[in-house]
Image (cartoon, rainbow, N blue to C red; front, side, top):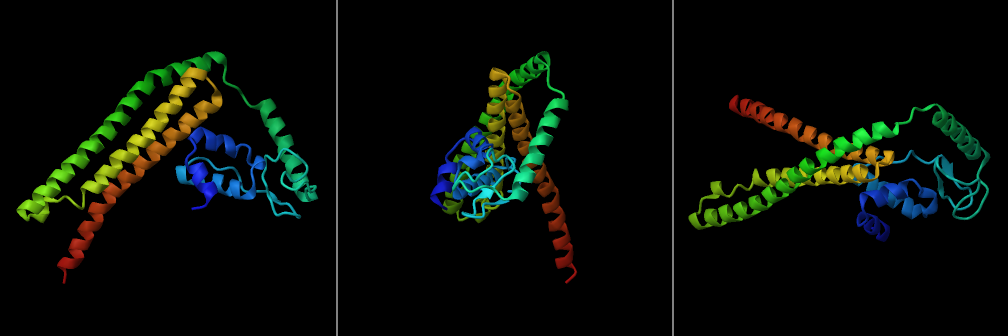
Length: 230
């Protein structure tokens, strides 16, 4: 792991997302580290670069604010300039025609988030506490199994997966609760988007675990039938 990756891994979600909106302010190594951290956390990643600077090779993204390279000052190639101009015109046109949330609509959404936040926070904390009890219980069962020489009581196969499920779901849920709290307090639309993004990540993880819960027994049954035919 590079030094830049270690730095961005220690930053909060809001800091990483803010950096992703201003990639031109960072070096090439910094941009790659920010993109890697966004992928690791399951956050939305900016579109791929439009091209690179002909002098220093710096990547040029679609939100590049200048007509020259931010790293070396070299004027951008004409193709990149044309693409940036087109994107800026489209952004202005979309901003002029896109419907905006009215203040009363934002207030309603903030009220719903404000009421939902305590429950999401409560369930997330309970999940982490449950995971802690599972560690204590697992250690106790392991010691009992070793003392009684009964390996069936070690729970070495199932308990780690259940523990990780509780920990990860709790972390994702607490992240969602934190972003709901920020939106309810400040009523900024971009904070609502981040809260919904955290909710999407939470339900995606739960859905994948649910699919795995159906797939593992089915694979086990098929495997048992195949073994039984020999």
